[in-house]
Image 1 (cartoon, rainbow, N blue to C red):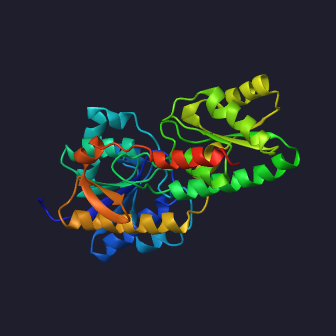
Image 2 (tube, one colour):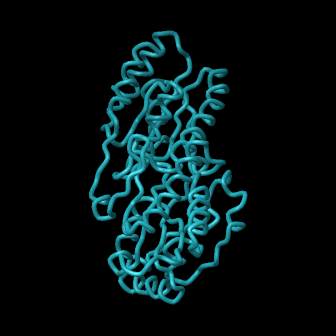
Length: 326
């Protein structure tokens, strides 16, 4: 490590996730407690490119622990993906005297962090995405809150759908990963769950599950679809055509991103924010704070981005086993 860290920047990037504010709060207060100055960078890497910043104090992060979203805002930056944009970001750091940056987000955020670190700026990443699809960590900030939000919505939907003996098709987020859909599907006792990791066979995965459930006396069927596994509208249409049932399709969309973070997300985000500042002070810049078996582990960015995470198929096995006894 070169010069000692005196001033750090903090930003949130990519899709927002409940708990990001808790992480920002922890970064700022830990830094101030260590005698460091802290600069808030608005709108992610875009703010670093364009000099959108403000000094942060302890009062800057008062009363944000329970808030969803991010007080620093977030945006995607095509300019930062270019060498010219990255040079502008480095120039901003030099002009402001920012020795290091804490970047809160997902894989895209971390790829940006790697680019910046290769240009001489220390960057520590904190994983935050409701999809829980960052390969280097078992858990990402926001996942638990998103799951709880989806479960609450589906529970309410089930109340009215059962009253009318209807089929519900609910689409949850998860373009490339089925963690959210599978976790939620188990939690609500779904008739079927469709995820990107398992190729969808409509007859096996949907039609036969509905038939089996009906033979057991059920009159309401809940199908949970990850957006990456197919269109809920298309699934609903096919159910209507092949089973003669009139399904109701609900796309939860961005409601899953909002809301006050759960205790798990607040606590994890706070620990990760603290760990990020400690990593910088201990000379472990250009790294990612990851969660493994309840412990936080610091991994170099390059190594972290090479890691992959596979869906825990035992959860899928649980779902399959319970289908025969709905």
